[in-house]
Image (cartoon, rainbow, N blue to C red; front, side, top):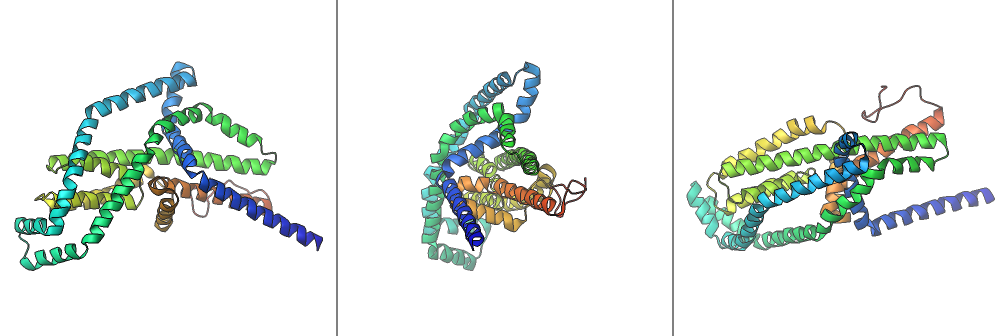
Length: 363
């Protein structure tokens, strides 16, 4: 009876500690998000720091030189491109209420129907749909505005994240060594070391690949829309590039946003834009992303969608950005834990298993 009571007490204490840990993570999620973005930024800068360290014979000097170059690039970018994007965004913001008013009044629908040769029945059907769902459309636009405002409130991350990243770039190796030194059991230390190595490789590859895909989308969207003479091409291209970071949902929202602006501004060749969006999405999903991203994430689409929705509920748009790497990290921990428990139960494994395969395969 005493043994059962002691075991029950340990289970209750473990559950309470786990619940307290989850509660602490939820309460401090804003701070944790800043640190997570700082880690991601450090992974992005780490290869450049490593190369400069060899040339300058010092990691501190390498970080200082890299940040000076990065600051110069940011200043040049905002001096050359920033004003154009800002002007286009201001013009779009000023024109949007008038465009929505024309849409709800039927003026814009009639004009589009005349320009593209729509039948009277088609025009009336579209107009009836827009009038019926006018409140829903207005509410959707308002929600988008609220989301944009939420993102603007997180602008402090643009300053704090690079500063925090300096510590991770300078002392990241020491953090890992200190964490491993606190584990006395050799099997547990091997488990933690394997998890850290896998996380390090996955996050480094994911951050650089995701940035590459986003930059590629920004350039292609801006260039094509600019060549086609679409209004607000730079703003739409920037939106498309930023939304590329959001898995599954982001590209769809980008395509809908671009098409909506194209239709609202009475652009004549909207069908060409639709074809371009479909073709580019196919290239990104089946050519660029598999080639650049590889199989480092190996997440099922349902798991990705769940992560995106859960991230949105927990931390809004920033949670959406972080959802996929967090899900992939949990997957790595689970697989390594499974191997660790099998090793404890059946003895040392005869070969090392890789994280990259569903069932594990010998290297």
